[in-house]
Length: 242
Image (cartoon, rainbow, N blue to C red; front, top):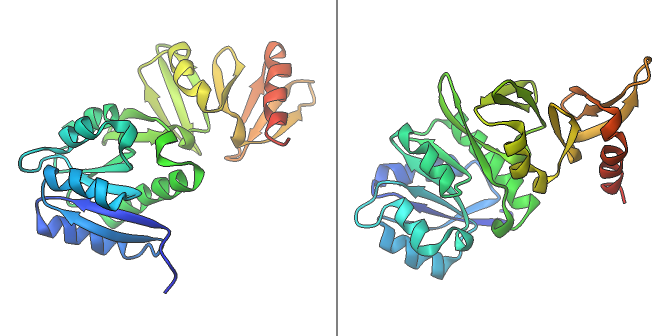
């Protein structure tokens, strides 16, 4: 059996919930469960003793809840956190606590797979202390937490910003100017007055027959680059190849 790359802590006061996460995690050979906890006090001790790379953290536990665990430990000293909860109402607080994602119980296999895709990408990309911030968006089905690295590009939509991940988009009630301050340190550049692009998602810069420059993204999207932004944007793309 290959050696696991990352260790996991599962914290939930319900044995069935802990077993469920462990069964779902069995499909991911790069992860090994280092320990299980029943309450927040046990979690704080296990974080010191086991130093896991990832913790599945129940929000509502006896004594200290999941949010209190993070408050006492501080977000900077936490591993990657995926919250477990039976209530969708905690999504905003999960974002504020800098959790990578949250899972509604009972957890489905498909939803767990989507979370693990984010976890693996994050663990491969950077150490936990420099993980990407998350952005919470509201959809018709509830609330979704997006890692900034999942976003290909962002366009202004009146009083909203539209966030594109592949062919799917999400509306966020936030101006492009305010959002730019949040994502620019994570590799986004202005393409034109109404669009931001994640530079490492650019496949190529191409000229149209009419003489306009467009950024062709890995997702296949084509976003025009304004004349004013051409030099700076091209320089940002070239810097990734040096």
